[in-house]
Image 1 (spheres, rainbow, N blue to C red):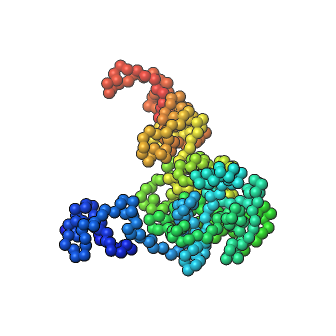
Image 2: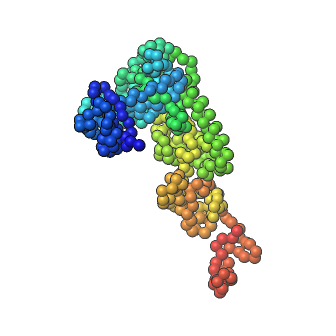
Image 3: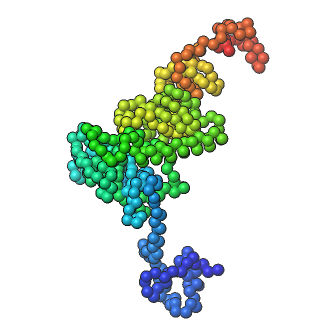
Length: 400
């Protein structure tokens, strides 16, 4: 067989392009071909090789209420919802969670230019009240071509119910979510916003009835379906997947945009857990949401130094004591990323024991243990026998 991979003709008249891993293979392939002048063969420069052929990607059409991903700028990779399709499918109006940096207008022009290019702001819903509190103003007008959509306008962008509303090109700025890259539970939770945004006076009519935003409701519906599906899958593969979590536990977020957030567990449902943040500033950033839903895999139990705890399972089950230190597990395993080791000073023996935080529960209970068993009492001096311990003595420090 010939040692070439392809032969193509481009827009350049009188030339053909032969693709191969070796030059001798090309010489052998064209030898004897009528009309081909072998002596004029020239290797295409590496910098020009990509211009021989240009493949135009096919634009995948999108539909209203379909989930898409942004593919450019600070929004690259972010989830968005198609609100309307325009220009025969060439453009669409999307709804997304904004990435707004309110400090840019306070910086010198050159510094603001560098910051705008290099710093990616976190996702946060637009708030006219917050804007007014910073001495900045926004206007009110209807979105072009959509008279029923009344929006806040700030720095040339439109915001409705806290979401960014923007017209973008399909295939260039947004692409449909595929089966290989569907919306995740974390993204849907961040997209969802249960309370509507209002102006400082709260007296405008945005053209929609009160209640949850349409896009937020769609995210909530899909979130419930995915949670139920994952819950059923997990139930079939494992009978225990909550990592020792219980109602009222303090947890720390270890994945997603809210990494580091701490809060109390208010409910557990299959593979998801609802958390109420401890920090008032975090509650403000969440746009009025008092609870946030996470996958169990996205949180881990947080035990603070000084807490009084009870061991729920393992070698030291039912022991109680005070946490004197919390250390990260050594190693690179997945289990090490979601658990830590707590050093507990026990109430009974006043000894230090090391226990995984997932095996601990905050409790005011103090283990007292038994005083007697089989004729022996706590703190008795006894003689050990058997197992090579003949004539050795010891003191009983625990019974039971």
